[in-house]
Length: 453
Image 1 (cartoon, rainbow, N blue to C red):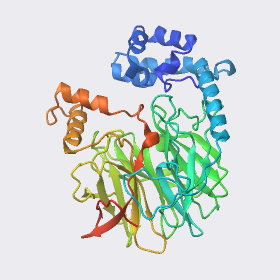
Image 2: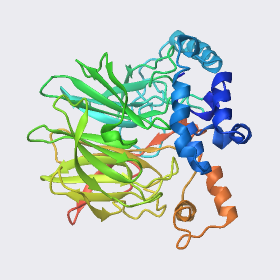
Image 3: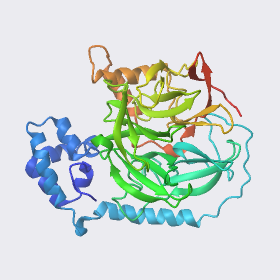
Image 4: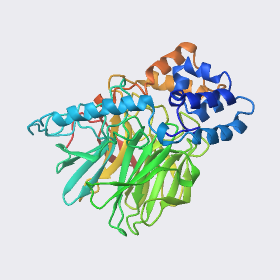
C-alpha cells in the first residue's frame, strides 16, 4: 500500500491512522464515502475535487504530506491486501496444477465477434492487444482476463502471448509478463488497472520496449524492457507520466524511414497528444502535436490506433464511454509531427452506431502485403448496443458538460449507469472483432464480415 492522495478511499479507510488524518482535515467526508460505493472507488484527490469543498485544494498538499509519512514497512501491506495475496497464491497454484489440453483445435478463417479459441480449445486471452511480426511468425499479446469475473477484484492476470503463422490459429505461449502476486504496489498486481500493452523494438539498443497503461487514479504508464520479444522483461518505470499529463489510452509507432519513435496518448482526457520518444524508447520528452483538442466526454478521443499506408499517416480512435462501445473516428496526417484531421466514422453500414459493438486497440500490416487488419475488443458480448443505446449514452454523458444541447431523462440516466459496468464487467468472456481495412476514396474503411481469411 502506498499512502498519498492518489490512493483510493476504500484503501485509505483500511488504515486507522490514514482515516484519522482524513477526518482531521475533511470532517464528515469519511461518513459520506463509507455509505457510497462509487465514492469509495475514487481517489482521495478526486473525492475532494468532486465535493467542491471550499479550501479543499489548499488542504490536499498537507494531507498528502501526512499520508506519505505512513509509508513505513509496517504499513506496506494492508490487511485487505494480505488476504488478496493469499487468494492469488491459491489461484496461481490451481492454475499451475492443471494439465494442459492437447492441441487439437483448428479453424479455417477469422470469425469476428465469435469466441476465438487457441489451438488447445481455450479462449484466447490477449485483450486490448497488439500483433508483432518477427522471423515469419505473428505474435499476439495482450491483457489476460481469464480470472476477471467482475466479482473477485482481478483486473488483469498478467500479459499473455500467442503465436501464429496464418492469423487464424494461435498457440498459447504463456505469459509475456506474468502477474506480480506478492507486491500490492507493483503495477502488475492483479487488482491494478493495467491494460493496452504496446511493444516497439528499438534499433539503436536492440531492446524490446513495452509500454503499458495504468488506468484509474494513477493514470500513468509502466515501462518494461527485454532482450528478446518473449522476454523476460525488466521494469524500467513503475509510474511514468510524460510531460506531467495523466495518461489514458495510447499507441506507439516508429517512423518507417528514420525509426524515430512516437507516443500518441489521451492526455488528461483533453486531447490526443503526440510526444517524441527518446532514442531508447523508454521515455517521451518532446511534445510534437495535438489532435482533437477542446472536446469533452463522450466526444473526447481515446484508444488511438496508428498506421502508415502509401506514405500517409492514419489514426483511428474511439469516443469515451467506458466498456460500452461508441462511434469511431478516422483521421489522417501528412507526417507524424503534424496534427491529424478527421475523416469521419470508418465503419460502413454500422447500424449499431457503435463500431460494430467493439473498440479498436491496434492496426497491423499483413507481412509482405499492403493490407492492414484492425484489431478490436467486444468487451461486453452479453450487452448489445444499438442506435438507441448509443444515442442514449451520448446524451447522458454529454449532458453533464452541455445540458443546453444534450437532454436525457432520469430513467435514461439510470439505464446508462446500470449498463456501464467498467469495474464489474465479466471480461473473461470478451470477444474480438478483427476486420480488414479497405481504402475507399482515400479513406480507411471497415466493412462487417461474418467470416474472412
